[in-house]
Length: 470
View 1 (cartoon, rainbow, N blue to C red):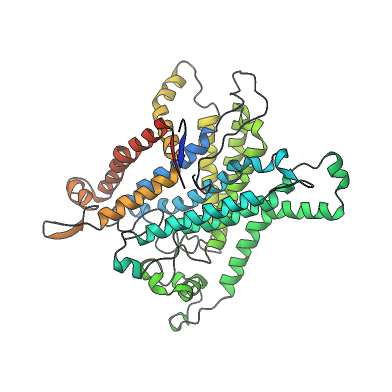
View 2: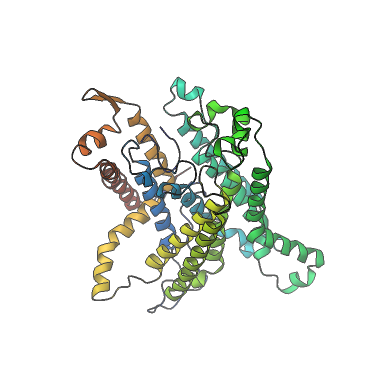
C-alpha cells in the first residue's frame, strides 16, 4: 500500500493552530488606501479567494485520487508506471506550486519599510527561525505518517523521506531563497540610491537574477549533468544506457544512503528521494514567482479588470510551459518517479493554467451579481466555490486526516465470499463493483468519502473559524 501523495496504489473569532507556510492559508492581500467601489473594483482590503480555492482544488484532487482502490481503479487515476503522465501525477506538483505561492504572501510583512534595516536589507533572523521550525514540524508529521500504525514491520522498514518530508525540504530551501534575495526587488530611492555603490548594485542585480531564474536553472542543470554523466556500478545495470529508474543516479544515491529496505515498497529508488528533489524545487519556485507578483501588485489584484489581465497572462505562460515541456520530453522522458525536468515543466504549465482559471473564476468578476443567466450560474456554482475555499483553509489537516483514515482501514482485514480484503477496499469491491464497472465503482467510492465526510467537515471548520496549524 502506497504512502505517496496522490494515491495509495493499494488502494478563535478565528481560532487557529500555526499552519506551516508550506501549504498554509495565504495572508490577506491588502492595500494601504481604500478603493472607491464601482463595477470593476472590490474593497481595498480583502483576501484573494483564488488562493484558498486553488489549495482546495488540490486537496479535492488529492483526496479523490488517494481514495481510489488500486485493484479496480482506472489507470489514469494511478501513478504512471515508469515514464508518462496521469491525473494522479499532478497532485504533488500542485501542492508544491501552492506552497510556493504561500511563501511571499504569508511573509508579506518581510519587505515592508518598517522591517528594513540598513540599505534595503530587512531583518531576517525571526523569519529564519520560523521557517526552520515549520520545516521541522512538517518533516516530523511526515515521519509520523510513515511510521503509522507503528507495527514492527512498518517501523523496521521506516521510510526517511516522503511527501511531507519533501514539502519540508523544498519549503525550507525556497523560503530561505526568498528571504535571502527578495530585498533585491525593493526599490532603491532617495539617499539610499545615492549611497549605494557599484558593488551594492552588482550584488542587487545578482540576487535578483538568482531569485527570478538562476536558482531553478542551476538546480535543473545539476540534475541533468549528474544524471547523464553517471553510470550505475551495480552488475544488473552494466548494460543500461537509457534513463531507467532502477539504474539511475537517484536509485544509487537513495539505496546507498539508507538501504533498499527503507525505499518506497523496497524498490531500488524512492520516488521522494534525494536527487529528484533538485528538480522538484522548480515547481515550488514557479509558485513563489506568482506569489511575489501578488504581493508586489496588490492594486492589480484588487480590481476585476486587473485580475482578468493577470489571469490571461498566467494561462498564456502556462500553455507555453506545457508546450516547452512536451518538446523537452522528446529528449528527457516525462516522469514523476525521477521528477525529470520535462515533467517539472509540463506540471508547472498545468498548475499555472489552473491557477489562472481559478483566479478568473473567483476574483475576476466572472460571476458578478447580475440578473439573468449570470445570476443563475452564480447561485449554482457558489456552493462548489465555498467548498473549495473551505478545504483550502485547512489543507494540511485534510491531507493528514485522509492518510490516517485510509491507512487505518487498510490494516483491518475483512473476509468476504472466501476472499481476503480490507475494511477500506471491501466497500468498493463488494458494495459497488458488484453492480458497477470496476473503475466507476472506485471513483464512486472516492466521491462518497469526499462528499459525505471531508466536505461537511471542511464546511464545519470554516463556519467555526477554525484553522488547524502546527
